Amino acid sequence: MSNETDPGLSGGHNSRTMTEADLKEAYYQMVLIRRFEERAGQLYGMGLIGGFCHLYIGQEAVVVGIQMELKQGDKIITSYRDHGQMLAAGMDPRGVMAELTGREGGYSHGKGGSMHMFSSEKHFYGGHGIVGAQVSLGIGLAFANKYRGTDEVSVTYYGEGASNQGQVYESFNLAALHRLPCLFVLENNRYGMGTSVERASASKALWRNGEPWGIPGMYVDGMDVEAVRAAAAEAVAHCRAGKGPVLMEVDTYRYRGHSMSDPAKYRQRSEVDEIRKNHDPIDRVRRELLERGVAESDLKAMDDRVKAVVVDAAEFAQTSPEPDPSELWTDILVGS
View: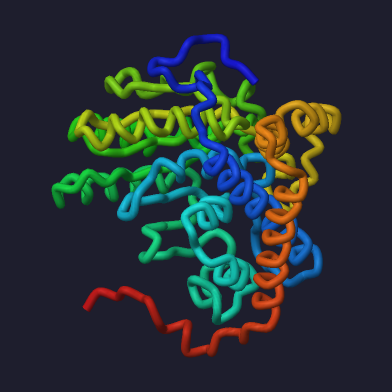
């Protein structure tokens, strides 16, 4: 996967600097997200998950690579395709899956569902159903970081489909004006719902969209966790140093439809198969580990650990009680 122009920062050039231990951790986290999402899809098909459900299958390297460069206190906010960010941030798979099934044991006590769950402990601020709305909230989190005098960073995820929303550019302006520590992560998975980015965006190098405000941009192969982490290290350091925001475009791909209700008839099956065969982020790390001498049995053991975690989460999500009707009246802010 490539881009025809050179990035503004050095992001995207993979120096293969991750240690074996880091690669193993990346492999585990990506497999966890993949298997969790596959099980969520199964539960949706069984009628146990209601409403919308947007799966992250194929895009795992993005959140895992970036999360490896974050520290306690850094803020994370994203769109409705949010399960991967939650798991990468360290949220309990039980609580995430239980929220998907609308149970009391979920992170929003069954009220938020797939698109709206939060964790103040992990500094994860959603999960937002309004396209592009989280970007403005993300710079608010960055403003809070700066106001408090910390070096914490706000990582604000959005997709190429949201990249033409007006509030995104308003957020660019304010973030640049106040030199806010915000890492804008544009996950370009090529299709905004059913419309390809080529048909929807006049801008062909989305990492340059912040240039009018002086925001440096970088283009990264989002199917390569090592490349993502290397780029994230540079971008996060830029933000922590008080130099203002960075825009990182990650070229990635979703294997499933926009949501579980989308049959994805707007693209050829051969396109998906080609990406899976030649660019799958998990297969890439698996090959790298095997080349470094890691035994197949070690990888199998990690796969088995993931399976046990996901099975447990699914069981909890089906046996946790439904919320009491009184839960409707909690966590509501009403003006006096």
